Image (cartoon, rainbow, N blue to C red):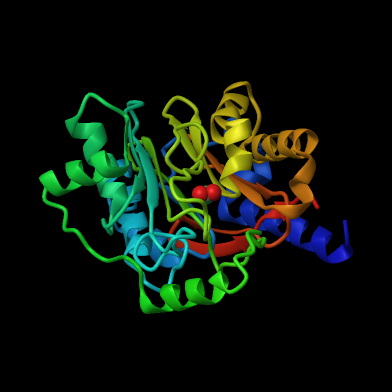
Length: 325
Ligand code: GLY
């Protein structure tokens, strides 16, 4: 590891310690914090999503339900045309269609998901409706669109002029090779712990730019892009969905935390599994975030450059995760 990498790794872990106040001084990761066992309201999200954290904190930090917090939080990114990896303004598939994936999970283990959904700006809210209003977990493609329209969502053109121009430029070579950390941020995955001590998670993305039409990534798959178990904690993923799908990384992380690992240790082990089993790992990025019921967070990625936003104790900070390479 280069000295810069070591510094970032140490400072990321160090900053996590600061974020958890006196917990970090008195406890090793994964141990019961000393003193108060009151829930520590927390919002944790992938990349530089401080604005999304603000929207979620306005709910989870003020007595609201974690489920509402994560939905409100990620909706801000879905609506932002400048974000070219999520929702409106997302980069299209190779045929020029913006297709969206999202999932959501609440503190009772209920979950909902949509994948390969077109024309709907807020797939996360459709996923929530799938969870709350149907006996199913996943709706896909035309069926998901029909369900959204039947439930009052508006059909919209999600391809912005900027995304269309980039796609036109890409078509000149049509070279399909996702570039690591190319976007200022990729998929948003968010976890929230509310004042009642309940956790929920959400994940939403437009997926890989210029993917083959019909491709679905990890983000709408419960246990791949996101997983929450209210007895233990939750995890979210970002980066190359295929790599996350092959390892069911977020389910793995929650199970490792259940067995006693800290969120940081669990994220590191999930990345280690990908590195040990997937030969091409030097050419792609995966980043994981985890949060346990005590409000302890973990963050780790394959490559440098994965940042995350942590809102806790009235502080909303962006930090870079430590990485394996
Ligand atoms: N992680 C987002 C995707 O691969 O679609």
